[in-house]
Length: 459
Ligand SMILES: [Mn+2]
Image 1 (cartoon, rainbow, N blue to C red):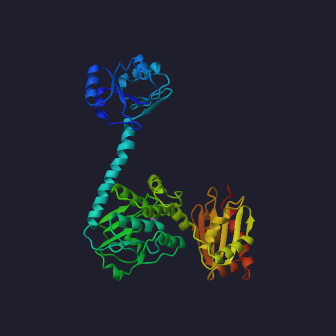
Image 2 (spheres, rainbow, N blue to C red):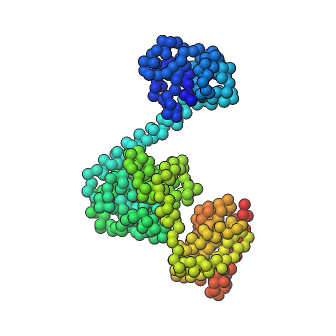
């Protein structure tokens, strides 16, 4: 059904035939036939009638119940709405006015909301476009651009680097993605492998072969190396030392650097491939723990946009690495030795080949019936690694883990995930036990439950 706009002529001339609702241009209710003729010349449909007269609306909506959009001067508004209510009591009415109008079936939208919801986002897009242009111009004539990340690049950094390279319209040769360190976490290695992203190691010496340097998800002061000139820094970490770079875009309120890059790409109308979308989505997911930590409206919007473009199969493969036969055996043994005490799933895996099995099994432990916490441990070259997970509505995992193991080594984390690493011998000696797997499990249970009690009850 065609919506009807009830508006004084000045607004009609502004809206004209440019507005459409659900693809259908509206018709107008105007006061005189001269007005209607003027509109007709511009191919705008209009009906003549008195907007303060109820029968006008009965005639207008005789063939069906269309919606009415009312934008009358404040002085006449109450009379117009009263006439509408008398003429077509059940019609949907949208009023454009500063003040909210009371009444059944009446929705008010203010001109301020128009500025807020329509103009503001477009204004931001215009600014982002200008920034993107400036950035691209700065790198335009460079032969080789170095895209630099932190020493153990995480998914947000890797995705941001790939996005920057795309924004600059370059390839691996023209803008390699580099780190002074190396990628260590298995998920991050899986990300690079599955999405075919080449991260290259670099030395300070090799750095001089580049004529431009860009940093993503890191700032010059976070790295040990000293830089003569940095061209660009895009990051979301808090600024500790003034950022020295020709172009700086640091937004500590953002959950991920990937979100900033998505804004650039969208503003510059750069096509985001499925591979890039998958990387960026994973970057935001990893840095915000699936939007649970530090995620803002901007992150949510970028996330929603990428979600439709990403390859979710690839994402699953990155997040859930394949398990080898050895890993399955270790998990089977861990399951057999599990202890569930006071809603906490405990399992000590003993010696494990790779450390990533421990957090993976900790995630799994949380699925046990009636369990709110999962504490999984394992030994890797003399160190005891403990991974802690919880359901989210209980005490902070970071706090409890620190209280339980902080005196023996590094321990901490976030609300739902935490980890601790300590020399195995220290744990056993602190309890006066001999070196045995059972002793280790018992020590962990005892320490963890004590810390949980001190730190408040579950719920
Ligand atoms: Mn980040």
